[in-house]
Length: 189
Image (tube, rainbow, N blue to C red; front, side, top):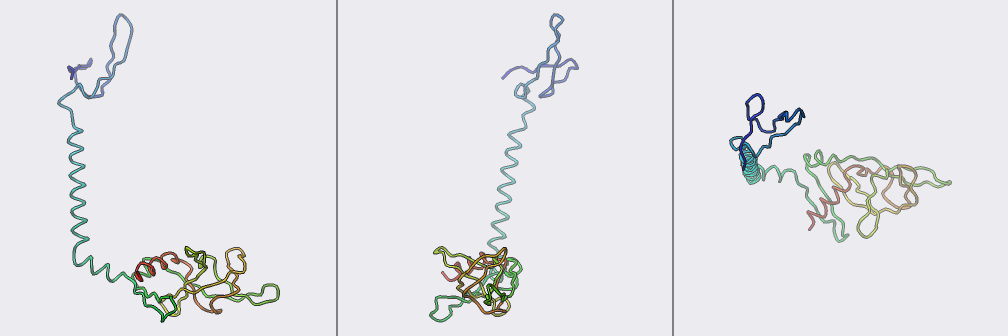
């Protein structure tokens, strides 16, 4: 590989800078790490990192496969109940799922638009499915959500003005809507 070089002080540190004076010209030379065989630490550092990764993976697998973890996952789930032959489902979340998803609700309001009473929902409550249909998740009781079809007349700032949808006063999910849809489709299969 090469012989080790000593600097003016007589030490052989890797990556040392040596000043060499040849015929009155000062030059700097950087000693190379690989020239110092006894100081090769990188293979040990890589080995330690790989070993730490293996240990972390083993601990994770042990915790994930434990009966306690399965009980926690079961407790944090949702149940999906079909509503007759409507093609809609009732999604009931556990208290821990509500907290984890941070679901928030707000009531549908009536406002007057061009002399007509119209329902308005926060635009954050509106959900578009893959076919372009518009929906909101109503909350008929705590932790329970039912998808309801809406027809949007117009968007005004942060509100969606509806020509068809849930009655005024109905609570709709405004935060966590995408997560509710994911939970509904995941558990309804």
